[in-house]
Image (cartoon, rainbow, N blue to C red):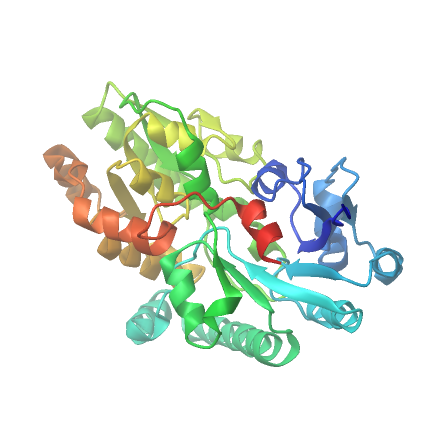
Length: 395
């Protein structure tokens, strides 16, 4: 019997931390595939890489410091291999993809969880007027200019430079429908999202011991840190003052429940100590949500855990969000509409007290939760679809 060679897969990455290691299973070996992880953070943003001092000790994980490092790894690739670009919207990686394609590398895309698209056109005019009133025309025009640059660069990169994938691995009905419009169905394969996989494999018993706040890492945002053009008046100190004040209000109405913070997976865990005295945990979001009476959040993808575990969700909006990006407030409202959850504004202290005291937000909309699960977190038919098992069989 001829022994089948392992499928060679190259993953192009940007952020190396514990969450990413677990998410992409860098610390595991697979029977049918040999995965190499090439991290482009030093090439994309060298000063950020040096500042954070990342250290990852895995033989299959390599930092790409320069073109020479890339070329040395590139030369060792076999005649037949596959690759996926998870770095993000950068011209440099789109350019280097040409080399991988030239060596007969076949590209595939993979989503580990769907990100809900926000339609900016609906309220962009109203939000723009409010932005001008609060911060003035100069700030608005700067923000609009940087938004335009970002939009144009994304369009050029996505529509002109980037190589189209040969295969698509989708983790939700929402992702599948988006791709179906332009791609042959035979190229699309279903997998479990990271959140669905964690939910299916969990043996944790649900309880109502605590209240979990899902931190979004606004003050330590990785993607925003890598941007070349930044224009914001969002003050993280003011934001956390409002959050802490809201926590006090919650504690007065729910005195028997401690508020625990589930840190954003990309956050430096020590950075949150500057802003709050609340207890916090990293890489424990699912476990914390499972023990919660209800969950407080903005628009984090970790809201999926609360939906899967059928926990009530209280969504926090803020007037300050538009000082950073117009997407934030729209995203909060989008989630509130999709889930039937209550959305409140941090600045409306008297109104928030009434809402918390009534406690009607603790009743979940079971129909909307179920529809959200079947649309954005998984599929209607319930099957186990291991990520790398499915990928290695399909390629």
